[in-house]
Image 1: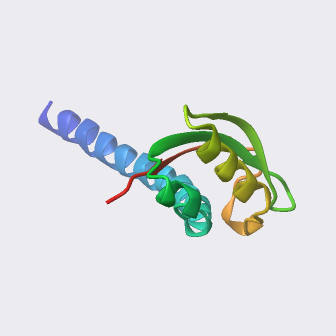
Image 2 (image 1 turned 180 degrees about the vertical axis):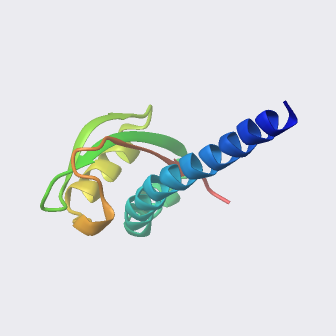
Length: 113
């Protein structure tokens, strides 16, 4: 009986570790895509000068050429939203770092310090 319980616990433990390792691979790719975008999108001068703060939510895909195709955006600040869209449209992501056709979701927070 005790051996059976230990066998189940060990199986569950290894199964959980394997699942975490598999999910971690996707997270690494996600973080590379998101980091590449974050490196390109900075706080715009017009927003700093006008003391504009806000959030922009973006859902997008990366095509086989590394170009970003925006699916939807959401923000109450149209000028911040337009800025993010225009910056993302000009970017090319390294194809090795993405899952082609996957929908990525990002939130950009522009806050003055």
